[in-house]
Length: 216
Image (cartoon, rainbow, N blue to C red; front, side, top):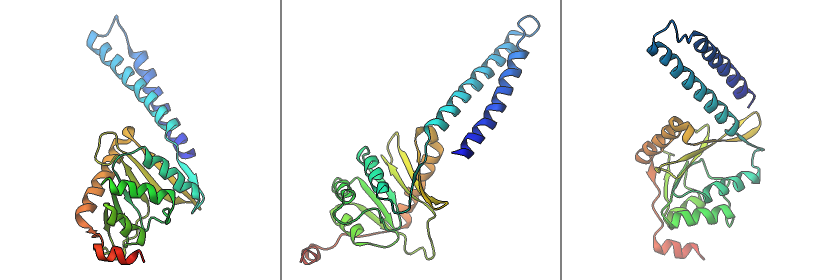
């Protein structure tokens, strides 16, 4: 957050300098109408930029957790409940445990065909979700590939998509949220997911007989 504030201050200083310069240059008597109009337009744009930048930094807050903190699962469940179709890119979805609220929520998503899940290898929970209707894919064929972050796309491939990106930093687990004001990032993540859907291997549901055997 400190780096974001520092960056904001630097951008505001530059914007204010442009604002003041344009304001001083406005001369209704000695400059043409179009020159003065251009200066006014620049002032309006700079003002809008400053307001947007301040709002973005103030509202864009990073969630901070201790590694393996149960609150991570609680937060993610809260976000998933608000969304329709979701795409989750993880290593082993360790934040989802058998019988937990998170598992129940993902099973509901899977049953409604609203879950796309990427994992490194097929875990028991991933297979259970595939059996329930989720599109589960693995990236184990990409030997040596270790994602540096995990992310979730909320309302995947819909207007107003949001992205949650989790990553380690200085002994903490951070979750950063991006929305419409970060359209370039959201579009980039969705493009990556679409490419991953084509390049990864889909986990097929267990046969009916195998599911019956697994219950005993």
